[in-house]
Length: 146
Image (cartoon, rainbow, N blue to C red; front, side):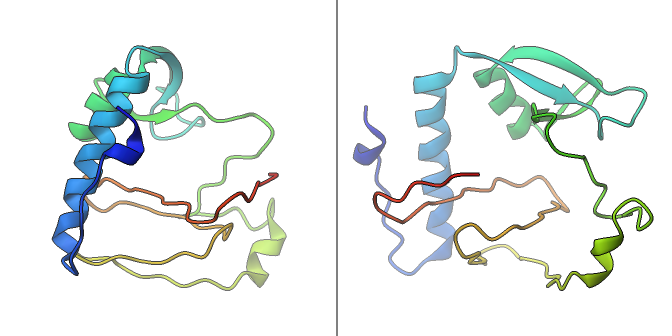
């Protein structure tokens, strides 16, 4: 089944976004569920308990659905080593002095609410509860070089 065949109409009801998320998870399990992927387990790479594992994409989705953790801690998709990991809740200003010049908006999104983030805007999300986030890319034919 093609993702374009998976539909859910919002009809102005934010609660229907849940139907889209469920359809997306089901689709991802069908097309990539058996793929082996690298994941990182633990709060961050600076923790002693941090490790990398190879698991199936379906197993990652199951961990996310059950709170995002294995017995060793939170599970994330593997990151590329080109970038520094920065604890955005406790930034080391001596290592990252330009952080003092950053402007930011801090907000809490409640059930049924959505936040629009313009394309290619950097953002940081911290979940206060078990959550599922979906990013939609609306532009047609645009390529993105990162």
